[in-house]
Length: 74
Image: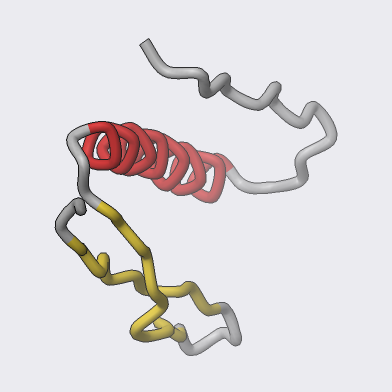
């Protein structure tokens, strides 16, 4: 059981259904990533997420790309 809770939906959103779906996918995958980080830390491993790249589209939007840095426990 995790201590994380979903954020309530923003009823004032002006995003398209496609954008809303993309955000849900990112949020769900981030939730899984956060759970995996907690499990790794509880197993005695240090996990650091570093931005290693930035993806840009042709319309001026961008998103960070991450790589984990893993260190064994002491």
